[in-house]
Image 1 (cartoon, helix red, strand yellow):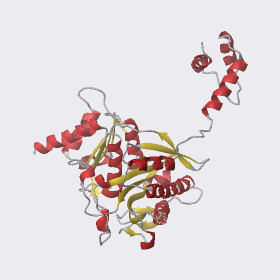
Image 2 (cartoon, rainbow, N blue to C red):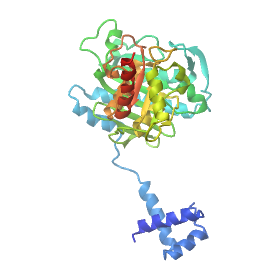
Image 3 (cartoon, one colour):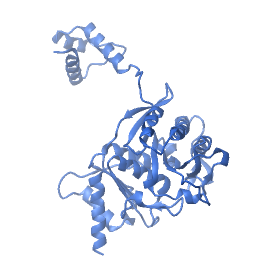
Length: 392
């Protein structure tokens, strides 16, 4: 029996008798008895633990940082040069700043509302303002952007002529910020377009592009760890922030969403406002005629809910309701970037009628219904929608 197998065997036995603990390599007499029965000496077991700890916590001298990853990926895109890496570096910097602010919000008195309302009539949180300023300042000073669209600004943000580059960035600086005071996961969302060969006037005309023109999209999630999920058109990869070296490290390669999940994510408080198709679909997941019922999971921060869907499969829905007949989520900087990521990972995204990436926005703050997730789950919802539409 190898040392590793003996280690696992020992751990299983000790777990059963529930009397083992390892702290500073101290082991109770109950474990010692088990080890003697196995004819395995304490010092060998201790040495094994130390060696495994050393191996598991060794420093990777050849880790792939986000910058290194993008430099390699942009070589696959003929029309992209080093500017994309420079742009994503500026977004990284903004995300690092927001991550630090979120972690220290309670200590630095950053919780609570600012007393202002944004263009959508929503209460603006103190962290909303800081996050927005970080994104704007980092992007405008990167010399890679020409026009920006933020959830917090009524109009497009025009970059000074001498600082202009060739990219357009649409972003939600702090998604789910209403949850920040109760320490629930929040995030940032961004989508990157390339400007037309000649900038049109007014500049807003350059922004209103369909999602099929995206060069890259991603989101950051501020939770137990700070992560960035990114696609530059060749799959989806995840990066985790290592504060010790100040870099995002590649930790999830080529993320693929399962073809079907067992979780639905929707705000069920609006059930009375759903159309018949959505009601019927959710009912079929809660009370299936055959098979297992689905689990309900809803955080209320889009980034958190979509990230869980991306990792575990299932479906995320934010349909139109009576109070928001056109949907509530914003198309340019919420629906399209998230749809792009999900589709790059092998999933589907729709507004209930057509692919989200086929929708060309008419306004920068245009709203849209959104259904995204595992292919089979989204296809099933669309079948319900078609069925009830045909029956009208």
